[in-house]
Amino acid sequence: MAQECGPKPRLITVTGTAEINLAPDQVSLSLGIETHDKDLSVAKSQNDVRIKKVMAIARGVGVEPKDIATSALRMAPDYSEEKVPKFLGYEVSQTMEITLKDISKYEQLMTKLLGAGINRLSSIDFGLRETRKYRDEARLKAIRAAKEKAVAMATELGQTVGKPWEISEQTGWNAFQASANFSGYNNPRVQVEESTVAPGEVTIRASVVVSFQLE
Image (tube, rainbow, N blue to C red):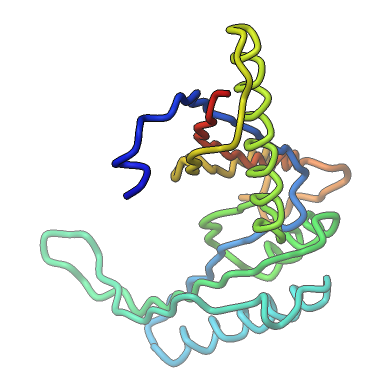
């Protein structure tokens, strides 16, 4: 109320931005196994066998049990796409989410998973474990950048920057970007002899708007 009723302060308002580029330290996989058979119990049994292999392989490369989860399970009859559909059997599909926290074992894990019979790979996402820590770091750098900009602009005009009057963070501007190149993961027989993965960098950005009083 005092700010609204009193004289309007002399302000300089600036935007400060910052970004941090980091190598990803984990990779999340969303993969699935589909099995088909005329007998639903057989299709389900085949699916269970492959899923157990996937879980054993993941644990074998150091994935913790809490980082292995079933995200979807579907069992349904399968019909042909003819004008008069024919019953083809039953389809059982199960989707799993696996988070690997040692990227150096990524290709070893993928090769073994393909050999275990996964037939759907929905997504592969490289990321960071301590995202909150790096978001906070980027935000502080953005605030410093805003102050440096305000001081430079005010000095050019023969003014002095005083206390901050108002500060806000631009929501929706923080972003994560990860890129990766993959080679041969659709072929279960591929033998990995050298690295074919370029996980790129994760970029964390922050932007703030700060108003400083001019003295």
